[in-house]
Image (cartoon, rainbow, N blue to C red; front, side, top):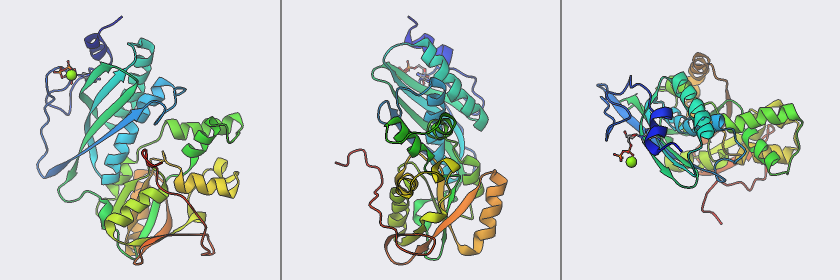
Length: 318
Ligand code: ADP
Ligand code: MG
């Protein structure tokens, strides 16, 4: 059996380019660029809670980093480096090789590097901390939404939740359709380029990890305003469109695991939003408006209220 230090050396030691010093000493060393603020975010993935035992190790490596990069994207930050704290039931070489491959592939695509971490035996648990940079004072925050702003989302919503419902046995899908939504669940694409190109345009932003109703609720609370969402305008895949309306609404509004960006921008910046999205190569859809009256109103395309009982995901809710 390989030891802890063999595993680190084999799978998690890569050359440092952005850091002055990477893996191998007591600390990694970074030099902050002048005029920049550091953006730091940490997300933990626990088997059975955040991923199923059926996920391929490559996809798990991708997802563990992707969900963290999604937080930097929501702040408009440029990712620089990350750390990885890993608890493993045993030193499983095949698992680690696949996991590291998925992890490093996404890191390379984003031009970021692993600079440290911790490795221990225990129930499978993955905790990544990402560090990025953003020009001072320009980070996108949850608190900036203002009455009259348009509400936008990137990509398509709800597929990850639909895949989860297939795993739970509540929904059946043909093989190719299942593969498509399963990919959305297991390999989310963090919208880093979009977040950066929205700096100076968006008034607020958040990434959708716990479902639109709950995550938009955080923006409304932090910004001290309300909103209206047109559920018929929410972008969805052809697979989700074929499902009953009630299931579509559940996946779109309360799905979770979307890792798309939800952001607000003044109506006067509509064309700038579209240009930023084109520049980032990501589709964005306007799906509502910020309103002065507190609370979230969900309506259909005709403006009729849509009854909904969804709340954001809460690990400790009864
Ligand atoms: P210490 O005991 O001083 O905390 P460790 O023995 O835990 O150091 O780790 C040795 C080196 O390997 C450190 O530089 C640490 O950051 C790095 N490291 C440990 N586990 C990982 C991991 N899973 N991924 C990347 N680097 C790691
Ligand atoms: Mg240690």
